[in-house]
Length: 247
Image (cartoon, rainbow, N blue to C red; front, side, top):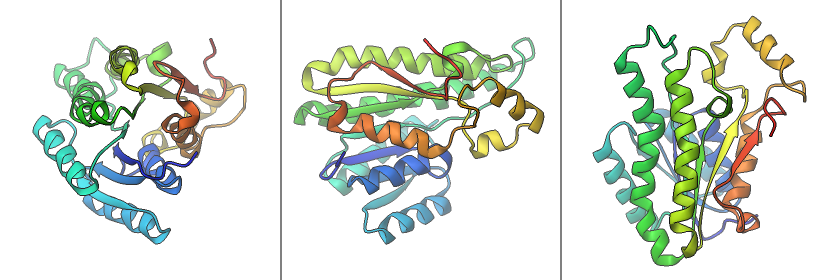
């Protein structure tokens, strides 16, 4: 699955799924532009990649800011000459029952999880069209497929990513650009660490494989979709959930 000669741009790369995806893409040979709000964690990630003889540069970025997205993608393109693999991973939660959910929390989640993906895609598409090769991978969620009480904003944003994935796939497929989504199930990350043990135990009971997923499980799926091994797959949502949701 060599990605040598390609350049990946990963949002939300400072921790969790995004961090592991960046490490995996670099291991497969891609130069990686890692973007997130936490500069210190990004620097640690870049050091880890370069220590393993990979190529990476850190770009501080708040994906809720449109102008920052434009400037950062431009800077990454100037640094590496192109961006031809995009991993839209940045995401937040602001959980609350819908009757109590504040409009600000709805807007923040949709802006960060969904609108930022559209904006990043818009910035990388011209180069992909020009070179007639590109990989766009959106990190959605099993809850965008099945819903989750108390997460109307999160589930809506992640379901929106699935629709966005299919629309983009139809728009750019003729130029040898694929657009796919990866839908993680219950994955052990900083975002899930705060959940109660009772909730975690209940979640595992719903997973046929009987375990919580790892960020490596997701990174493997992302690396596959970024590679030429997945060149005839587009508009697809790859569920990586241990069987938590089927069909």
